[in-house]
Image 1 (cartoon, helix red, strand yellow):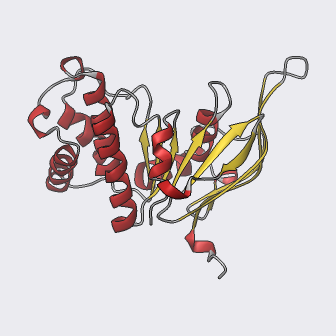
Image 2: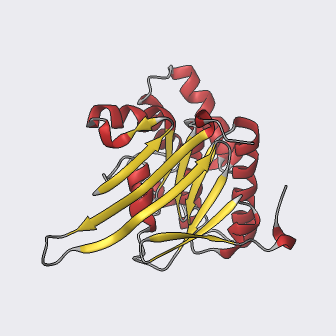
Length: 239
């Protein structure tokens, strides 16, 4: 059965990303191809410096490719202007950054609420979504705490709560289980799996954690600027 174009959330075709000038040019991505369907979980593996975060930033419109095409939710992002990129990020893409990217002077609840203001949600809707997201990640009791009062694992969960509260069509997560113990990491991946199934949300994750392969639909290795599909152990596949 062929896949409808509307079911393709991310499509990268011959994507290249280089840095530097002609004399010091560094090829990070080389004619990379990737296609992700709606509601799927995909993880990218690779050594540090292999270009995983670069690819995540390109798909999230935080950076632009040197060559090739990238379509996100039906949009050719290379042809869009910065205002259109910003609108796409505000409304349809959730981010979980490795550095958390939490405002230090804002509480956990306020950090989530701030993100929900960007798409213009009402005060009531923002409050409901923020509280629900904190409950989902098990941090309702820490709603009034600022980042310095939270552990690294708790900050990571706030970053995840902020992304899911937006209820985006695509979530991009850089090391989402970093700083979490095994039990909590599995809880986060179970949550991602449930959101994907219930809301048809698509997830693209970057990680070094081999456990994630138990929860995702596809895993890729990024090496020498190109992706290779990692064959999953049949014993760990999930329906």
